[in-house]
Image (cartoon, rainbow, N blue to C red):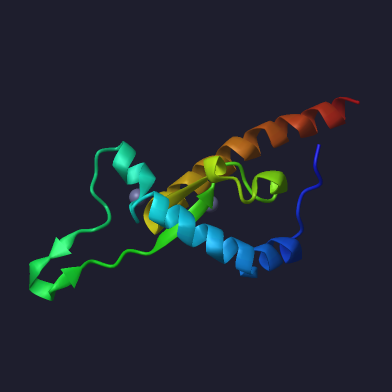
Length: 114
Ligand SMILES: [Zn+2]
Ligand SMILES: [Zn+2]
């Protein structure tokens, strides 16, 4: 078991050069495409908009599949990182939050029992 990282520790990590380099490497590995959109067969990134003479810009986030807070040892592991668009990233975190919230509630019930 690892200790959860504090907000300050996480902020320091995200501001660090190691992470900035890693983040760019992961985006390049993923061809600057949202991996979740790809899995769903959507083309999210690299949309060519002839009217605007260029690519549509979508903000990409490099996401920790196993969250940094609880898995700091995987912070810079390629297998734990993937490129997501903002939309998918928000969805994934909502889902995680719900999954995380439920068992915690059950835990409380146990505490009360004791
Ligand atoms: Zn996406
Ligand atoms: Zn994330």
